[in-house]
View (cartoon, rainbow, N blue to C red):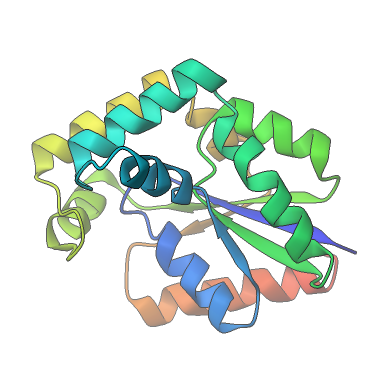
Length: 185
C-alpha cells in the first residue's frame, strides 16, 4: 500500500528530526518549506524569520491556504511512483490536510509533541533561524490563529511525545514505523 506520511507539530517539537530519521531509513521526503525558500530566492529576499513569514502569508493570501500542498502534490506523486511511502515535512493547515486527504487515500498524520518550554529552548539553540522565547511564542500564536495548524495535530493518527533524549525519540519513531509497516495503524 502506498502511503503519504505527514509529520505535524509545533515549531521545535522535533518534526525535522523525525523527517531526517525517516530519510535515513530510505523514505524519501518532500519539504513544504521549499516553496517559501524558492519564493524568497525569486524575489531576491534574505532568508530570515520576517521574510519567511511575509512570503508564507502572501502565498496563502494569493493562492489559498492549501498552496503548499498543491505545490507539493506533483513531487509527492512522482516519489510514490517509485516508493511505497513518502514523508512530508511541513504540512501545517487544515486546508492542506483536507486537500491531501482528497488526493492521497492513504494519508497518515504523525504528530510530534513537546511542551512549549522545551520547544522554546530548542528553538533558541537552533543553528539555522534561532528564535527568542518571545519570537517563538509569537510564531506559535500565529500558526494556530492564522494557519489553522491545530486541526491536523488534533486529528493525528499517532502521537509521539518528544521531551527527553534523541535516542528515546528514535526508539518511539522505530515503534511507529513498525506499526505502520504491519498495517497496525
